[in-house]
Length: 121
Image 1: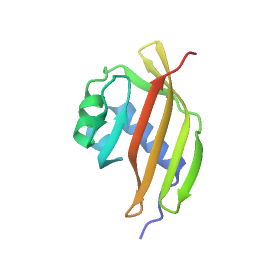
Image 2: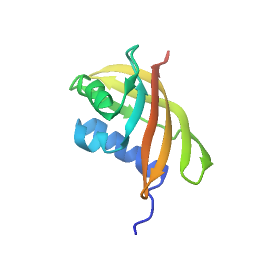
Image 3: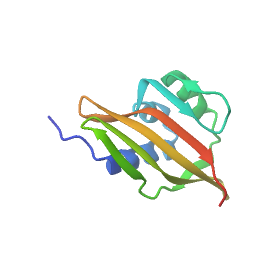
Image 4: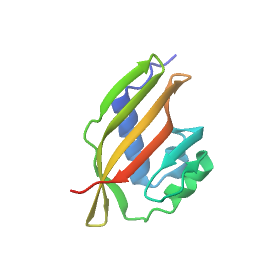
């Protein structure tokens, strides 16, 4: 059995999938019952709703930088993260706060809850 990827490796995979606009690869990082509060008011409830949310992002939206977030392990198989991520839409910066609740399932981290909200500068 392969070792569980570190949370840092998980973040790198999330960024790579996001920046590639590869929805299948990206959604494989979320639990089927994942929830997301993003740049719209509505809660995205379930992987298919999360998929639709990310599918609606523009083709020029990408992660410009994702400094290591704070990580707190709640148990062996649950962790929460909180930090900043800098998205960009073309040349326009889009700074966000980002938090996740991660659950380890069958040796892989999955996002159970995702919250992103714009921040000033």
